[in-house]
Length: 505
Image 1 (tube, helix red, strand yellow):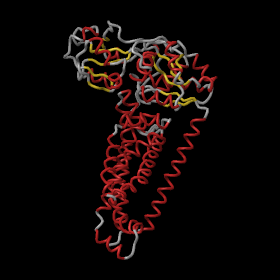
Image 2 (tube, one colour):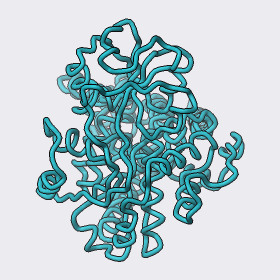
Image 3 (spheres, rainbow, N blue to C red):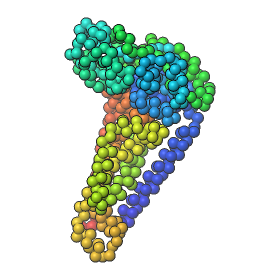
Image 4 (spheres, rainbow, N blue to C red):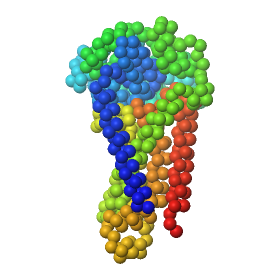
C-alpha cells in the first residue's frame, strides 16, 4: 500500500510541476510574441467587430481574437494587463464607466486621461450605438422616459452591466425619478422575456437587430441623459508601434461602418444564424451586412463541429491541472487539520469561505493580480473551488482511523511519518478519494466559466449561446460538459472498486 501511495504522490507532484512549468513558459512566450490580440465583450456586436478587426489585421501579420471576455471590467483588465492589445468600445462607456467622469468630456480630455494609464482611443468606426429603453408596441402609450416615470407598475428587466454602470440605471433613475425596481436579465434573453410578457421594459442597444423584429417602441431620452456611444477602438499605446502594418490597415476602418451596416451584420448573426467570422468576412469583402444565404445550424452540427476536440482538450486540461494542484495542497492541509485541533476550524473555514466567492468576481480580481487572461487565472479559480471537498474529506478520513490501530503502530515503534504513510493515509484513502471525486465532478461544471476570460473549454459555446439566445449552441456546450462529468464520476467509482478489491481483509 505504501509503495502504491508513494508512487501516486510522486506522479501527482511531477504532473503538477510539469504543468506549472508549461504554463509559465506559455505565459512568458505569450507576453513577448508578435501576435496582435483583439478582445471583445460578450454580446453580438462586440463579437462581430472583434472579428472585423482580427481579420483586417491578419492580412498584415499574426492576429488572434480573444472573444467574449465578459463585461467592461474584465475586458478592460485584460487590456491593461497586456493580455489583449485592442478591443471595440464606445465613447460613452469610456467617458463615464471607465474614466468615471461625472459628465461627458471631450475626446481630447479622454485621450489625455487614458494616456496616463497607457491606453489610447481612436478609429471611430462610423456609428453611434447608444443605450435606450424599449417596450412592446402594444403596451400603454408611453413614448418617453419621462412618461415611464408615471407608470411604476411596469416591470423592468435590465442587463446586469446596465444595472451597475455609472451611465446606467442608477443615474437614469435619478434623472427621471423612476421608482420601478428592475430585475437583472442577460441581454441575450431580454427580448424573449419581453415578448413572453415576463417584463414590460428592457434596455437595448440602438443597433440591435431585434428591435424591428419584435416591433418594439424605443422610448425617447427627452432629458438627454445618455451621452453619445460612438464605436471606437480602445487600445494599448504601444500597439501601433508593435504592429505598424496591421495598425495602418485597422486605421482604414475609420468611418466605414454606418449604423445600417452594423444592424445588418447583427441581424445576420442573430436572426439568420450566421457565424461571427462569416459575417465579418463578408462585410470586409464588400458584401454588405449579411453573409449570404443564412441558415441556423442544427444541434448535431454545432455539437460535432470542427472545434469539439479542441474544446474538449482545453476543458480536460483545466480540470486535470486544477484537481491535481488541489490534491497537492488540499491533502497536506487536511492532514494538518486532522492532527492539529486548534487549526482545524480555521483551515476548514478558510477553504469554505474561498468557495463562496462568486466565480466571475474571482476571475475579475485574478486578471490584474496575475497580469493575464486565459488558462492561468481560470486554473487558479478552479483550484480554489476544488480545495474544500479534498481538505474536508482528508481531515474526516484521518479522524475516522480507529485509535487502536494507531496504538498498535506506536507499539511497533513507528514514528509519526511512518504511521501517517503506513496507517492513516492508507485507511483514509477511500474517503480522500471520494473528496477528490467530488472536486473533479464539480470542476467539470465550474470550468465552463473559463470561457469568460478566454480560456476556452465547453463554456465558449455556452457564452455564445447566451449572447445569441441560441438554445442549440447552449446545449452544444452543456451536453459535452454533462457527459464529461458522468464519465469522471464513473472513472472514480471504477477506481474506488479496484482499490476496495485490493485492500487486505
